[in-house]
Image 1 (cartoon, one colour):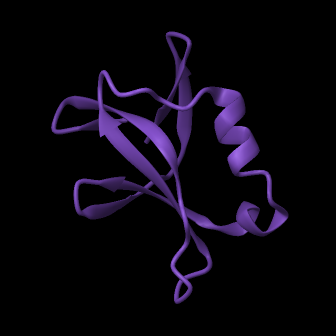
Image 2: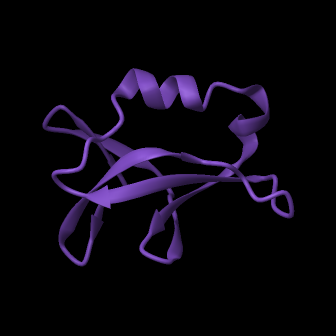
Length: 79
């Protein structure tokens, strides 16, 4: 995913806030941070309760909604 034209890498899945259990937050960091591998992301999001969650990315101090993804140059790009 890109923020201000800077690529960000998904580094983890943050615990959901008890007040908003229908949210899934992906933590990010600028490159060259270690990004999750595809299988790691799949394993972290396999819980049936998470499948109905709205997905957000943590960018600095903001939550940015994720609407979809695409495969590009061997990577998953979030939109």
